[in-house]
Length: 116
Image (cartoon, rainbow, N blue to C red):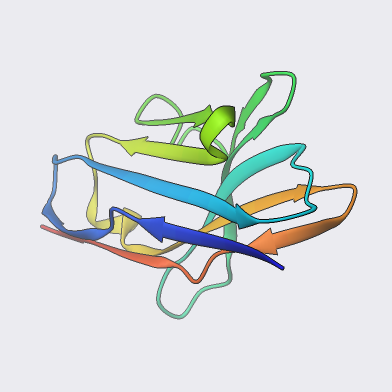
């Protein structure tokens, strides 16, 4: 069993910052990529960012690129999402996603609310 535990969500004013963390625990898993998705109220879950084992990084689009930074600590099986200059439209539940040859794993989500 693999568990992903997220933390770092909360309420912040527009223009503020938050740092999300997600740590994987368990046994017998191999991680090739770590990433983040988000789901805003009434909308479908959408891709935010991903970091691949070789170090390549992909961001969703210009709406987050330049404001969000994904990073990882392989030794801790942890991925981070530093979110700066937050906007009300960033309000969502943020989900951690990790995967590899043995499976695809999701966290329970952490809520981010950005007030205007």
